[in-house]
Image (cartoon, rainbow, N blue to C red; front, side, top):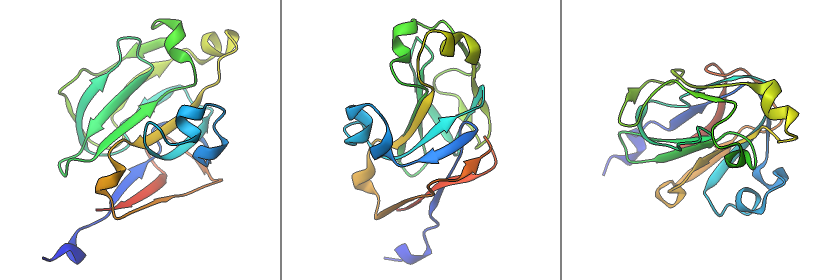
Length: 158
């Protein structure tokens, strides 16, 4: 009834870098929004933080991706790099565990960036709302240099 009082869900940069449109990601799963809608970051950092408050609902064993579920039921997926699953966890240090409540900016992963890049793997990082059908609006902030844990990369109207 009073939906106009609902605050938008603000998503901050989980990793430092430059924001890009999902259509620019050289992987059709992300570019065609098969895994969700959102934004990508052409990353430069090596720390990956929670992009919003919520509960960690998934961390891939390989450490290349994690999901956070907000109190309003929005599911956010952070997928660090493209084809990083092929590393079988090498180059990733998992700092938190599933079912941990986190606030925006809480460190979740640490990357060995030079190792991952030495394997010729891109560290473009999609940040996706998996259940974007629950949103009224999704507004990514494109072509901006962002710092992990500080800068807003997306606003979602519930």
